[in-house]
Length: 264
Image (tube, rainbow, N blue to C red):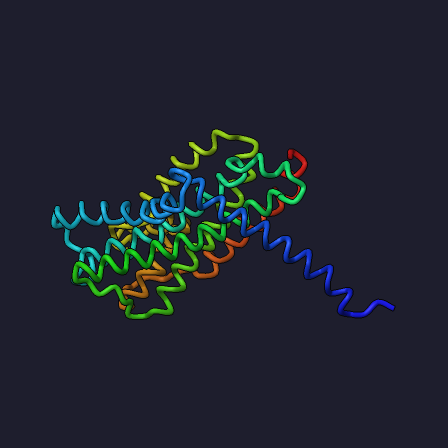
């Protein structure tokens, strides 16, 4: 007679084996970037942080006034960080299968496992980068605490979700058109310029502002900034951002299941 414990044992062993595969993929991912060591992973974390503060420094040293608030650094960082989190995650997730294709020849490793491992690594990387930005702001005498922490954290989480969704659908596109790696860099630059990192887009003419609001990156910036400046006269379409991200994720998973696996 088969007991419940005997039934659960194979399930647990399969789960343990899957977690070991996922853990190994994450460790390999962290070690194979920038020099093949864990110190190279520190470069991955620092890269968007340096990117953020180069942009902030340019505007601070040029004495460009912040459109709202007393701190230039805080205003510019509150716009740059969520956009960079989104862009770095979407780009790195896109490259996951292309960079780890030989691993999928092993029967234990599927394309989805490689994508999922890269997503987990990028989530950790994004949070570590955000913490470093906060620490640097504190070190230069800027208080990085948002007036509405729930609103700001929600915006950062939305940036991560959007990056995962766009990155997943990019995996399917890049499988057919490897040149999309370069094409997405150009597309991402356009999204970045149109995201309102260094301005308040709601000050633009209404017709232009309504067109720009179709860019989910812009609405993420406004979402985060509402956490720092609750008095801003802006309306964020939270449902649009979440549905955009979830729809992208769903399409990406469908491509992985019905198209990418057949090509493997």
